[in-house]
Length: 188
View: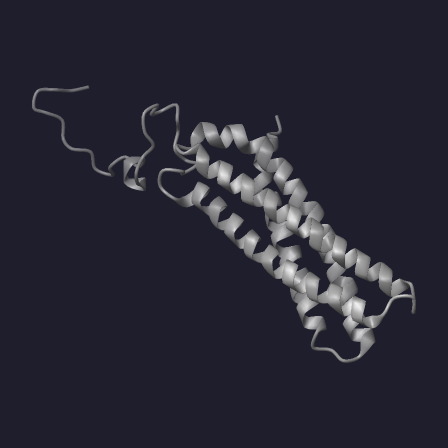
């Protein structure tokens, strides 16, 4: 049977890549003086931002599906709550950045009805908002990394095995290679 909660680790990497590259395209468009090259990068950025934002909301959904499973396994559910909260903030921020970029694209298509200054102000807002969004993604990724790799929030910790505590290190979960000899006269 398919486990939906397993989608989250696979899905989160697409929006991270798409949104980060989309903002790099936006920043790179500043370097070009010719409008054709500048708008090619900005249009490409718009596409990446929209796809990345949709992927971010899909990652939020898949994270909500995994929430009860992860909290059943981890020792500290507050770390899962923080990761979820910052993931939603990042998705909302990129929703706003994508909307600004879409408005800018629409304004450009109006050919002459809008002034160039308005487009450049929107471009600056997309760059600043996107930069903050990338920082939010990085922090959310850090919190997710803590859930997976840090002792005390390790996904390999089995709550069934120990209802009172999770192992504090990998040494607690790995049996010794050479067990001590059994006492004299005792045989299992």
